[in-house]
Image (cartoon, rainbow, N blue to C red; front, side, top):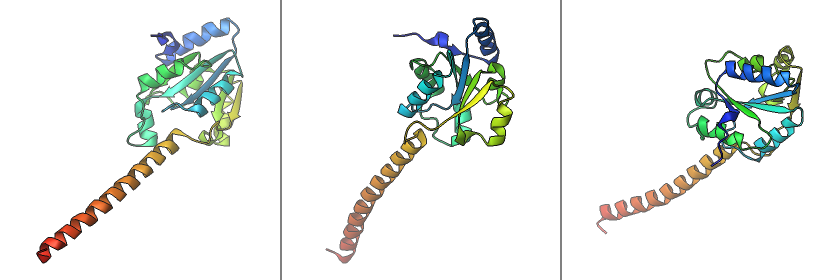
Length: 187
């Protein structure tokens, strides 16, 4: 079993210490963030593209609590410890940091002060991007890298399951009603 736990940074203080060492080594630091629930090809493509902007890619990952508050019940599908570990297996990722609910807004961004912050336009307004540039050398906006998303996949699964349940119940209910009517008629 591969042990990549050295790539998982447990706090903002520890990430600041790591970043200080990397800066001493003259490394260009790239930061991106997200939920990374049910990792798919879009996540992999996005991280590969992000890594092209520097020497070290740090990925901030939302905690289970943070995701549940933002995306609702049943999310995340994959628990945070597994999401963190899974990200360490992706070649472009150098370090991952768990983002807690109690962390201050943009706490990881302010702690890392990346040379390049990689974002998706949907997640930030133009005003927020302008403010983020105060903490970063550059903010680079990338497009989504796949036609699907975890949320879309889950919706498709839910819709498919609901249709199967409806079809099954409709058929069974119809047969039950027919049997009940026959019984009432004395057949």
